[in-house]
Length: 258
Length: 322
Image (cartoon, rainbow over all chains, first blue to last red; front, side, top):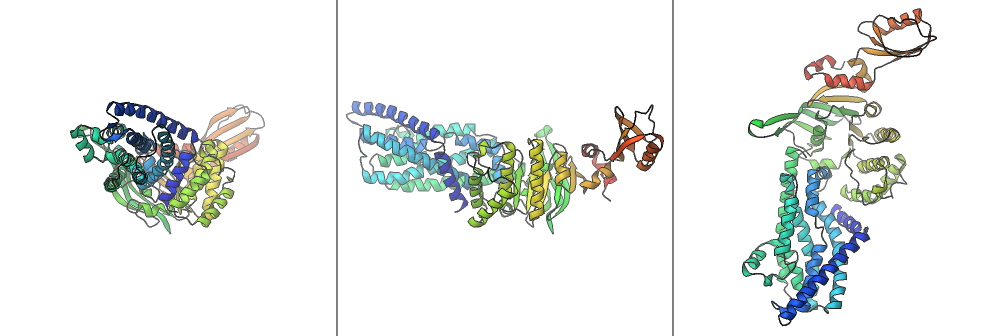
C-alpha cells in the first residue's frame, strides 16, 4: 500500500478510535439540524410552503448535506497546520521521503471521510424521520460523490490557508477568514439562490460553494451533474495552489530555518 | 568509504532590518569527513551551530555556501532520495503517532519507506528483541513512559535500516537507567549493522559511552576534532590523585600538586603535569607518607569540554590532534 493510502487509512482509524469525540460531534450536528430545520420549516410555511423554489423537504435535505460536509472536517485544522509549521513539526516531516502536503491531506481525508460517513448516515435517518425521504433519488446518488469532493476541497483549501504560516508565523487569522468565507459564501446555512444578487455572484466566483452548497444542491433534488465538474475543476485549482504554497513554504524553511 | 563529507559548509542568518540588520554566522566553514560506521559526537554549547549543521546534513536547510554529501547525496537537493537512507531521532520531537500504537506507527513508516511487508515484519521482530521492547509495541504511545517511548522512537528511526543515524539530544529527560539502556542499544545497532552514528548531546556520558570521535563546535566554528579517549590528555595537563592514608598526615606538602578536597584520611589532589610528572609526585607520596590506597584519574570530561568551550577559535591550533 502506498504511503498516502496508508495515511488515509490511518486517519480513518484515528477518527474511529475515539468514539466519544465522534459521538459528541454527531450529536452537535443533529442539534444544529434540529434548529435549522425548525427555522427553515417556519420560513417555508410563511412563504406558502417553499423558499426560493426550495420546498421544505428540499431545504431539510439541503441543510443535512451542507452541514455534514463541514462537520466532517476539523474546524481548527488551519490553526493546527500553523502550529505544526511554527513548532517545527513540518520540518521534521520533511525528513521523510514523502510529499509533506500530500501526506497531510491524505491523513486528514481519511479522518474526515470516517466522520462524514457517520454524520451523513445519522443526518439522513434524522431528516427522513422529520421531513421525509429525499426529493430525488438520482440527484441524491450524485450528492454522495459530491460530498466526498466537498470534504476534499475543504481539506485541501485548509492546507492552502494554513500554509500562510510559513510566512506569518501562525495561521489564526487565516483560520478565521476561511471559516467566515465558508460560512457566508459556501451556502452552509442557506442556498446561494436566496442571497442578494451581488453576494450570489461573488459566491459563484469563489471556490467555497464547492464545499457545502454543491452536494447540498444535489441532495435537495436538483439533478445537475455539472456541479461535480465544477467541484473537480476547483479541486484541481486548490490542489495546485496548496502544492505550490507548501513547496514555496518548505523552500522558505530550507533557506531561513524552522 | 565516507558517510558524510562537508567542505567549507556555512550558514548565516539575517535578523532585523535597516540599522538593526545583523548577519549571524550559525555555521562557519565546517569541513568534516565521517567514515561509514563511525560513531561521532558533534558537541558544543547552546547556539554553537549543532542543530543548524544537522539540518543542513539532513537536507531541510540550505547552506549559505560550501558543499556537503551524505552517502553521496547532496542533502538539500536530494532530500527525499536521501530520506530513504538516513534516520533521525530528536529527543524533543516524536516521530510516533500518539493516538496509535508503535506497531501501527511502524506500519505507516513501512509504507512511507516502501519496505516490503515480510521484510518489515522481520525487522520489527528483530528490533523488538534488540531493544527488548516487544511488550511495548502494542500499547498506545501516549501510555508509554518517556524511557519506553524512546525505545520505540529508536525502533521507528531505524526500521528502514538507515545507513546514517542522526541523534539530536536523544537522552534528554531520561532517567539514569533509561539513559544507560539507550546508549547500549544505539551502540549495539552500530556494532550489528554498521550504522554511522552522528550524535549531539550535552550529556557527557552519551559522548563517552557512545562516541569514539568527538567534534566540538562553538560560535559556528569547529574548534576540536579527535578521539574521545585522547580528549582529556590533549586538553588538560592535570591528573587527579585520590589517596587514602593509614592515618591523616600532620601536613601534606607536595611540589606540583595541590589539595582539592579532604575527607578524614582521604585526600583528592590535583597535579599539574606540566610542572611535575605524575610519577615524581607518586614517588614522593609513597616515600614520605603511609599510603593505604591510591589511584590516579583523568579529570572529568565535563571539565575538559568546559575548557574547550572557553577557548577562542584562534586558539584551536593549540589542540590540533597529534
